[in-house]
Image (cartoon, rainbow, N blue to C red):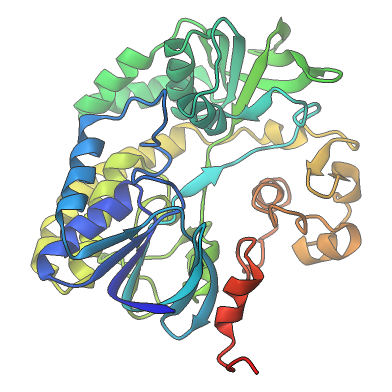
Length: 418
């Protein structure tokens, strides 16, 4: 079975939704793929305890109203099946999708840095905790510590508090001067200023980072370096996140070039591979506002509506300014590279400790010697950590990009069965 799209969009977060809606008036057949049940991505993730903003609901309604937008939820890309053709799979089947133009809106994932105890039950990512709570995880009266870097710490804390948790500490590794400098610029973006005021928490501490998660069978407490002093807190949950890493694996597999850790794009959001565009956090982290305008530019450009795309350039520049200020303020302290001890696991899938990796020269060398990155997550967690710790560039992914059924993989074989 196969399908064809004039425009294929991978990812239905803010960028993907905006791209589809921008391209829809052209009348092109648009196919929107996402691995979540409903559009919105991680930032507008749905669930029994989720509270979606009005904009997310409105955009969902507009998507449903467009007859030329065909949405496949719970669907993942498994492999590149040929020029302008992908193998995809949902819960029921696998099939091939051919396309004329493609927009990558694959988002980003959390950077998780290893430290003693980070694999204990009760320790999650910051975004992971937020997703679990939105999905129904009960946290009433639980004592929670949130640590790492960036505004997501405050957003996750707000979600936890809204659902009855006791947030004991929000540990931001950036210095007080860096955070104050960023806050001083927020009047340039009034809605962000108001958002920061509503999210402020009296337990927020700058110049503070996690040293170790404490406990035996599960998390019992956390040790923090807080403004030069060691502090230990008893807690039930610890959520850590040190920023975001662009999801570029599919882009790399398709032959798109990178600019640092992100997919390289031009003013039209076009990658260096013809007819392939990218928008949102796979091109660099900057928040939902930047993702929305980048997605709209990519959608207009992909269907040839260049005047409408160009008209959005000033708005993109405005939000790119916010992204630049954000990323500068929350640059990670080099001290975070020394948190892991020799026996601290870095690759959880294959139980590879830091001590087995420190002597290697690159990613391939480490994989051959230790199987690091060869487990179930295929380096999605440890790859980002090792890139930060050692500067190792993960190699382009090999298909299948996700676990897949044999029946799906057979779609790649054009030979008819005997």
